[in-house]
Each structure stands twice: as structure tokens, then as C-alpha cells.
Picture 1 (cartoon, helix red, strand yellow):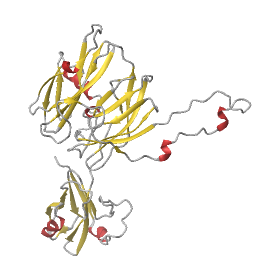
Picture 2 (cartoon, rainbow, N blue to C red):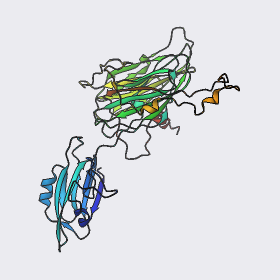
Picture 3 (cartoon, one colour):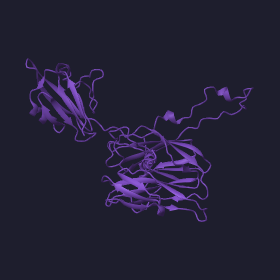
Picture 4 (cartoon, rainbow, N blue to C red):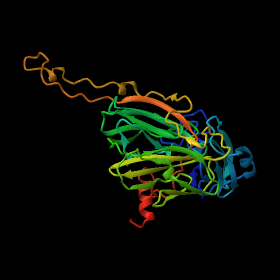
Length: 409
């Protein structure tokens, strides 16, 4: 359903801004090109906006408004004003100037409205802790479907960027076309904070967002869960996840439990035997879901990336999901250079000994973040933000969905 926004502009107030090069009033609206003034109209990326005349005024020539405002002006009524609707966003779209003749029965005026396209809202990423650990000395592939991205303009995919991680030097972190790859060093245990961003099709990027990944050691009997690419079933189907789970030879007997994460463009239900039933609810080139295996005291993560037949996304199916980008990652824009520098102690004598020789107890210095600054394009299209902001999203959604399915919440 389109959201309607009504804008009422006083005729004589706007008439003072007929010279388009003039400065706008403080706090005046601005269109996408940056022109500000009471006659600047930002046409929303989604929805529509109704520009109404001031009370007592009416439009004199709707056909002229429709002709001058094409393709942005969709309707016009002398008493109700004119309606603008975006045909889609184009960063190179030039402003449309629409002369609107008005009258109040005693006097007339013409206002030049300046229509510009409003860019889509930037993607959103939740700040969260991933509820499944990365193995120390191993590798964790976090599927994009588990990141909780919401994106208004990602119908054809977007981009994943790794900005930094901390502590420094304890892991290797990089983005791929389908996953966020985390390789902790064997000596590290504890929380690993990874700063990531997601971009839309118009190079609009989310704010840098922290994803905390717990790192822990696994036992020698820990199972291996694969990350695979499979054909996307047009009408859904079953995937036997047991074929993707491998237990080391000679491992002690233990019961395994499988938990499925949520898909982006469909639903996934895992039964007690480890069989996932996938049902698409919309057509997509790529869909994805994670699964998690608990065995003994170990918890490992795998994933299934579903690729539609004939989709030009360069993700072969069937096959293993690569842990390295298939394309060359692009360098991401560098943040403020000052942010890369570790802070010097405010008082250089603070670490000196009693005689000032510098042989006192060394202070523990805060480790600076290691900047990765890599971004990779992805064909995985995250969902648009739901109208109901209370809807469950993010990395905890799979757990909540499971509780809902079994009636435990």
C-alpha cells in the first residue's frame, strides 16, 4: 500500500522563491539534488506525495501541470493539488521544474515547483551477537541470511563490506558473495567484534554496525557442517541435512540435534531427523538459510545457498560455497585516518618507575582495530523493512521461529 504524504504550501510564501538559484529559507525542504526552498519537492522512492494548494487557492491548469511534470506527476485536481510518484531512483535524474498556475478568485500567481527524486533509505543492520560460535583455529561462515539485513533497494542484490575487527591480529575476516568468513587463530578465545556494512543497488550503505562473534575451542569429536550451493526448487522441496553433517571417525556416541535458521524468500522447517523442508513464497534468484548442529558440547554451523536455474549470479549449484570471494574484492573507502591510530598515553611519565627510569609496571595498551576495508557484491537480496517494525528480524529470528513452531513461546 502506497503511503500518501500531503504537502501544503502557501502560494505567496512560495512565490518569493521563483528564482531557482536563490537561497532557501532556514529549515526549508530540499530535493535530492540539494535545492532547498518551499517550492522544492522530494519525490519519495516509495509511496506518493500530494502537493496541495493553500486554503482558498486552486490550480488553474491541470493539463499543463501533468505535461510539465511527466513522468513524476501522476494526477492533478484543481482543488486537491497534484500527486507525485517516483518511477524509481536514478542518481543522474535531473530536476523537473513544473510551473503551477494558481488563483484564489481575486488574484493569480504561478509557482515553479522543483521536483527531484528522493534516494531510497539506506540498508539497516542490527547490532547483535551471533548466537553460534566460531571455532578457535577453525572457520565459521556466517550466511548473509543470518545478518538481519533490511534493505529498501536490494531487489537485485547488494554488497557486503567488512570494515574492521577487534582485537587486532586474532583472526582473518573477509566478505564473500554469500557469507561473512571468520577464521580465528588457535590461540584466541573470547568475543570477536566485527564491523560490517551492507550496500544497496544505488551505492547507499548502512551505518557501520558491530557484530560480535563468540570464539571458543571445540572438542576433537566436533562434527563438520558443510556450506553448500543447491538448485533453488521452484515449488519447494526437502533437503536432507544429514548428508551435510560429518562426524569424525572414532568419535564417541552422542545424539545430534539440528536447528534451521530462516530463509529470506521462503520458509524452512527442520524435522527431528534433520530434514529441511523449504517452501518459497516469492521468486528470487538466490535464497539462503543456515543450519546448526549441536552434538555433545559442540555447536557448529552450516548453510544452504539456493540458486535458481539460469540465474546469472556466478554461483554454481550444486557445489560447495567458497570460503574466498569468487571475484576480486574491492577496497572500501577508508574511514577517518585518525581512527586508525592508537591513542598515545596522555601522560608519558605514567608508566615510568619511581626514579623516572621507565622501568615501572607496563600499562596494558588498548589494541587498535585492524582495518580490513573490503567489499564484495552479492546477488542475495535481503528483505525490505517490514511495515510492522515489531516484526522479528535479525540473528535471533531463527531461534524465535523455532520456539514459535514448537509452541514454546
